[in-house]
Amino acid sequence: MKILLLTDIHGQYDTIPDFMELAPDMVIIAGGDITDCGDPQEANEVFKQIDVPCFAIPGNCDARQILDVIEYSDAVNLHGTSLEIGQVTFTGVGGSNPTPFNTPFELSEEELGGELLGGKAKQRARQNVHNILITHAPPPYCTLDDIGGTHVGCRCFRESLKDFDLVCCGHIHDHTGGVVEIEGTLVVNPGPASEGKCALITLGDEAKEIEVEFVTL
Image (cartoon, rainbow, N blue to C red; front, side, top):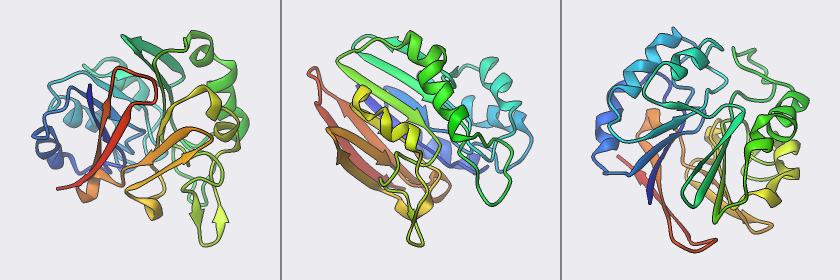
């Protein structure tokens, strides 16, 4: 399975056809910041250009009404839930922890942890060959999250690493094209799609058989 991972689209919808030329089997929008604090209906400009299964969560620059837009689109809304497809279990948590910019979709650590650990996302998740966390929020604490010498990642995600083989995230543009392995889990930030950046993730038949390739158009 070849997955196209996009994040931080920020309203640059004309980039989507170029990404689709990479011929993925599936598209994951990791809290795209699909809009740039714009009309949530604009997200349909992304979804209608994707002709393979698409799974999405909102970013902090998306109005909360975008959840309804995703629900009524051809994409699957993964925010606060889990979905099993064959040998892969996807779990999604959108929005971000608080920022200095008071963006539309911000959640406290307690809310983010509740969506993941206490809500239906965790309850529905079944351990599979591949277990993937899709989040827009800053990555697990002390993992690709340094901004000006300060770590801004989510502690609740760090505490949950053991449940996942792969974490797909965005939000922090300072660590684009970054991948690290921590406690046996790969954490990937492909960089902003608004700048033509993405990641191609290939899942093999065996656990931990994961390849990550960064692409800039």
